[in-house]
Length: 417
Image 1: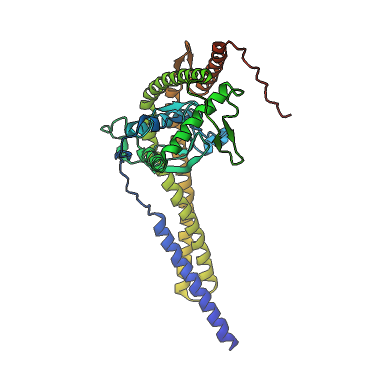
Image 2: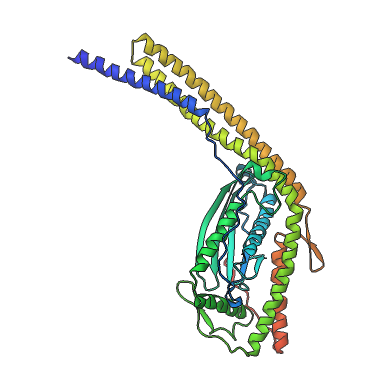
């Protein structure tokens, strides 16, 4: 009885080993297969609101320059295949493209690109680049209004079609047009649920928040922030209030600066577009190849390990020559599969290096582009934000000069040791 039980146990283990060997063969076949995704160039326009909006119900949009999300250390940048200057250029390019698409819908008032989130607009759009190359893009976008209400915050992602880089595609069609179109449609969907009273509250709150920036004492009790972080409109100044009139003049001057800045964003985008498009076109095939090689390498590593284990189990637990031969074949196949996985990893590393080289070449072309601002030749990233901050200081001084009052002294914030 004991001998029979032992024979049955060995038979089961042999069968298990044989099945492992068969599984490894299946994995070997699957490792060479790569799934294909059908990709198209999405050229459908975003949705329009469908009715005529009165002027006082058109919300002004400010799209802040995106967070480029560049890792701090060089090693992290290399690991993520990120070229810092390319990313910073994208952080300016993407908001400008989104601005053009939103503006084309006619669903909104003025749509502007701003160096950072500002109280000068009714609705703010901010973004963070999570991933970007010629093959795929993922960004996290947040839309909120002046009352502090967050409309939504969500990731948007899309895969590009190789046809998006054809010569016949116009410059106003982006390979990742779907991202911008979906953003426009999501914003419109939220806008449709706003009542005229909601829109009035948003616009009035935006104006009062801007007024508080320049004259906090005069407009301190007009709005207040509640425990949830929302801004509640308490009262409005009279329409003929001279201080309100001056605040509106200051606001128009800021709009004028932002509109002027918008021209520089357009010039910058036009200048970087050829190099940027060439970079994305070149990285398209490389990014796909890199992704496929990583998948194949992972599958072959797992398949090789299973094959070797299954082969050893089959040979050690059976006296059957057929099973032993099958186990030996499984071990040899597993070893070859592991060797192939190592080769695939080496090949993937080569493609990663090509991505770096292409990015470096495009970066060398993009870096020299500059803008003229306040009679100074400056780079767009960083310096524009400083110029914007300087402008607000000038406007603040002008505001109090018009009132014939000394500018209040702003106490510096304490610095933690």
